[in-house]
Picture 1 (cartoon, rainbow, N blue to C red):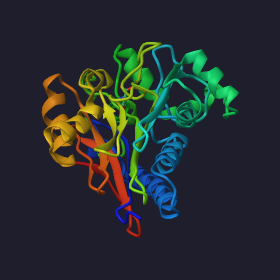
Picture 2: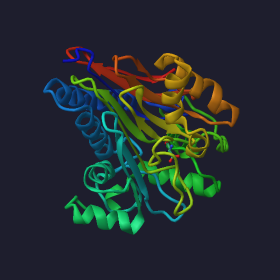
Picture 3: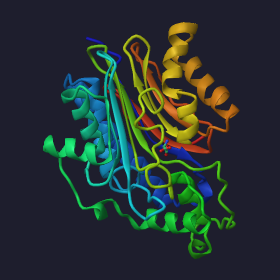
Length: 332
Ligand code: ASP
């Protein structure tokens, strides 16, 4: 039995500024991250697999309206929601993913069914929903994903005709004149097109020595209909291999796709023989910034090392080892 079992999660990266966050909101985020980590810890403590732990953690994050996945997902340019998710098992290299679904309550569960019960890896749109329905997964009306906060972010982004990362949208909304009042006032600045993310993810090492990763998102605010980012792409938004590590990313999806960011962490470990920390740091701090890639990732290796680097102002994140109090953080 591996005594280094651990779970790490993220709730997206971006321009998360202390000035745009009330003390109450900050407490809420910490509490939500803590609850999800505790649930993941329980799965691992009971001898559950890393795959079980990451799907349960991401399912809970999808159900939490604070994060841009499932209930609380951002809006497309058409005012709709299109959800993407992926999951990968490091012990078998099996993977499953779905993208552009509109009515599946928990996209990560659909991705897991693809991993377990399909010969394919990635389903899109109607086909993904048909597969999820055939698997008996829960469906909801599209309005289930609506939240007031994301709607406000979308209206602001739409007015500025930009696609915006979720937590940058939140900063923008907080800075809008309508929201000046409590907290420190922040100027109403135009959205920087390079600052836009949200998304949730989990990585885990179980007591049997296996790793897994899962990532789920509503994408970026005001994205074009049909746009798919890095999240559901194995190797870009999610990757897991017992031989190296498990990775879940968040950030400017297009850049993470171009850098094959999640896989690059594993590849650097395998081919350059560097540590998890070194590989992850190189991807986030050196390689992604070369193409203006903003965001971060969480990763664990089979020895129980954990790393959570990001190159933005903040990233909702945390990790929990068995028998220890979960650690959560938001800012740099
Ligand atoms: N990477 C996600 C996407 O591009 C966004 C995010 O991480 O918030 O869809």
